[in-house]
Image (cartoon, rainbow, N blue to C red):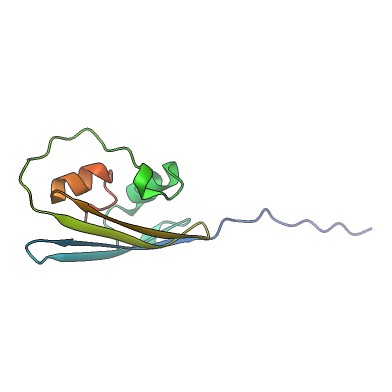
Length: 110
């Protein structure tokens, strides 16, 4: 008798391209992979943990407690890719870079 044992299915890797563009013309872009964590994001472990806590839905991220100035210098932020096999498309405009960092809990901190 032969038993066939299959390893549990691993969730597909999550891959996102994150970009920011501000009114001064600065453009930032990083790649982020999770499961396993990698890419060019400077704080990839933290960003992956934040995304895991909301199932990859950036609109559900709870902003961290951090004071920011009220200076209006809009930052467009986008995330495109997949989270555990599901497509991700996120786009929003934050009032300034500090608020982008705070409200994304570091996902857009690059």
